[in-house]
Length: 292
Image (cartoon, rainbow, N blue to C red; front, side, top):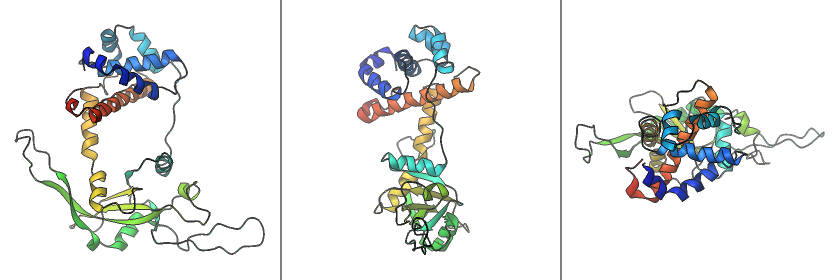
């Protein structure tokens, strides 16, 4: 983006930054955060602090202090199960890759009453059998259940005609309902008083020439979600790779030249916020897709 582009989206950028930096206590911090986003999005070969400060007309030490010295409210990530629960609590549907060792109950499994000992509260019903790994559940379901799914056209190589498809990306998949049963979930707020664990999709990719599945995903999308839609969403990694390339080439993801971990971490966070704003612009203004 050049200065004219930023002027055109100034109001939207200010609203966006107000939400992103709402957790920062001081107004000067929020103002510097907005300024840093502008610096990342402005055209320029380097997105480290000194070149950005020159383009913005500010002292680079102001940007440096914002990254390395001022107090931010940092939050740590928990276990994967906690991450999924957090998405559910926020009403955000997900489909996430997981490992074959993740444990779950079959979707049709039901907890049973536990005899009351006569002392203390009545025990919560429990599942009669131990949870199994996703690999075991998939093997029990069988490779014959997998069917061919095509999820998108294959992107052409640069030397070929860019608008001419060169085939399709496809694989063999099946999906079944399961109830993830890790310790975090069993103790979490979404388990009912009747002991029933939340149900979700297990998506499995099983190449026909292999003895076991190659990939697993969990998703809380509705129970009537078609298999093809689950596969399309699970295989959206190409979109993430495109965004990562833009983060590096246009927004300076890897241009940080400081020596502190916290400074680097915050630079990456702000570059990601700039990418999010540009993505929102694209969704609202399709003709601006090619602009950064």
